[in-house]
Image (cartoon, rainbow, N blue to C red):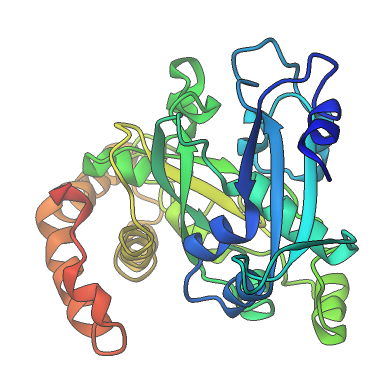
Length: 327
């Protein structure tokens, strides 16, 4: 497609175009996933947009927002042109345009939901995937993502209700947001994967999120309980980030989930059974004891050190991981 023709599709004012390599960005963000690196080595998907679409009055692109449920889709304004080329480029292997196919749409959708524009400041957060994506689609349970600082999850008016109670009590407030339902229709899945998506009742469950959102408010009637109403069987994927906008890593989130699941939850359940039928004052006393003894930096740091030692046996990168308190 000639540049002039391309710009005609971006507006009657023939704006300057910005080109972004979708395959390159996806492979850079997921260097260990073959489906991205394989795509990058064989072909090139390119997104063309107006160079100044953020400031030139371009309106929201509802098609993009319908294509992906990721909140980052809201950053895209104005028209988009997606082209597909084969060959790696250069004089010995030139690029040729080829037909855009339905399989490309899955890559485009994923790109639109994870890419942060270079002139926008981003907060490093984490996507927590549901059981199906982890076990059936073989995607990482905890994945690093970029979130715009202007994202609604950091809005002061509604931030308090999104803060995970255990993180607030421990002094590192983390906000959580449901990433929305995922449409797997164009993911290029195998027959067995499609069957799992359509028929596995456990596919959309996200136990990691249930334990992470454990109710630790000592004044709450549901203290020590898992919020299955809000974060139950159909949670799918969620995104989390620190309120102070400091970087949050997948391993830090995994450590916090494990601490809730294997340290806090068992102790809280034991206390609930032990003091069943006691008066309010007595219940409040043991709840405050649990909060004071376990929901603190000192105890978490001990657990984090233990987890690092165990995890780095299989994953050497854990050795360099810092505690969220050390950021």
